[in-house]
Length: 258
Image (cartoon, rainbow, N blue to C red):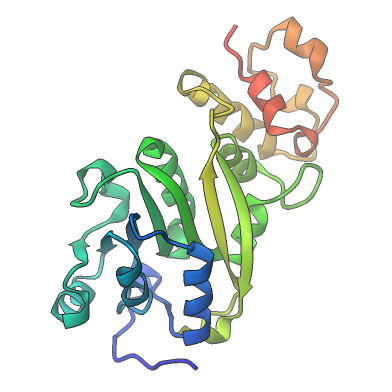
């Protein structure tokens, strides 16, 4: 059943609200919260998911950029125990929230800022344990792409160096208000025990990955000519290969500082 809403949707913030009761229940089962959990919800909308999470966890905060929605949410009697924050999530430090960390992050995020939010999570990875996001299906395919496929690319490598990404299930456009033109997916993000790339290597890693995939049909010997790479690494990695054939660990090898 899809519930109707009275909200005037703001296109600039990519607002599409999930309003299918059965699907909301499925998301709750997927998140599988514990009674002692702290959760940050990104983009609560009118609170359809918020009202289902709140009774299940110890601490809940929700950040929403739309001031009209924040005003509405704060007036809801059933959500008084949730900490609502009006603002841009990309400017929010997790350790400054009014709930304990490390926490879990949940959100139906604006699809146009999915990549920045993922890198925001990576930067603050010491303050969270798991994240569940609703993203465009195409984005989920890219994040979970395997070596040698069309979906495997720059973003797969950059995010995969820090996070394990699992595609949980696909969501049809009919369950949203307003109805988008694309399919969506729920993804689960979990940090690697140790990042594949150290913070010291990250800048070089980012540049090498970007250069390699800037012309993905060309061989590495053509796209990485501007980088100093040790003979030891060159002996391990064949530079006649194309970028989509390299694993994330091999990109990390290329990024080792001489």
